Length: 158
Image (cartoon, rainbow, N blue to C red):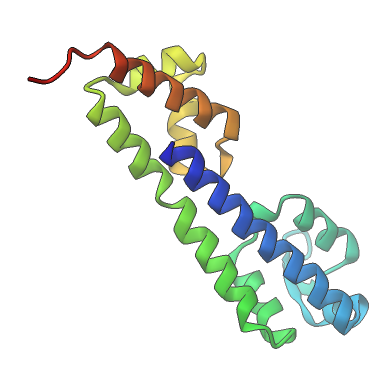
């Protein structure tokens, strides 16, 4: 169960990152911190201070924080652990596509076969491989079940 284990480890690290960020922002005062975090406004083509609604939206989708924004928070909050946790979760999740490819290769099957059994289209599968943060845990559990079944059908080695 390496895929699910990897996903769970990533999710745990991501949760630690999010909780540390929330804790540090509260500790230093939300308004004070957000006033120092600059984000690019596409409408006005200018950098503006981050608003509470922007911050809350980012917290809802904590897997999609850009590195530059995390670096700003780490600097403003004087919390290098924040950046370290972010980089750790990025390193963990980046292993998922390679691990899945190794599973497929070891099972001597193809992506198309796995895609068919998952009931998703090819574009979705390849998009998830390109951006592994979009995988869901239940999809990875299903993939591991598929490979366990394939392995159990192989004749015993002599």
